[in-house]
Image 1 (cartoon, one colour):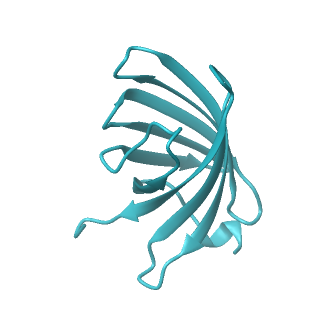
Image 2 (image 1 turned 60 degrees about the vertical axis):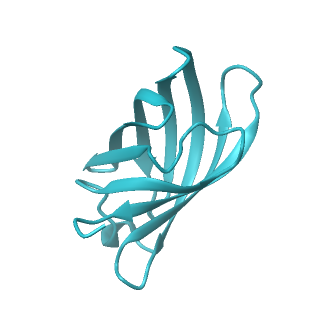
Image 3 (image 1 turned 45 degrees about the horizontal axis):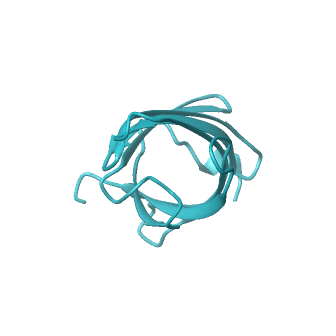
Length: 120
């Protein structure tokens, strides 16, 4: 998949799967913006009060990101994530993510987020 075929700007995503040590849920909504090879996103919902991520897009459309959020326990959480895009038959993106906390226990996990379109 070529980066030219993927533009994350204006896309909205929702978590569909996450490992138990993750904090995002199906109620967590991500709003992406892209400028050049830089991606920014804000996210909130479920147990996340406010969150932000920054990422760089490689030539295959993969994201190398850093994230931070405040959860509903009023804890500041930080981590790193590698996210690989998969185009669905209907044109929406599904992102396969491998992440690691850079705080607390430094555990690793995986998640899948999927693009939401107006009809969702």
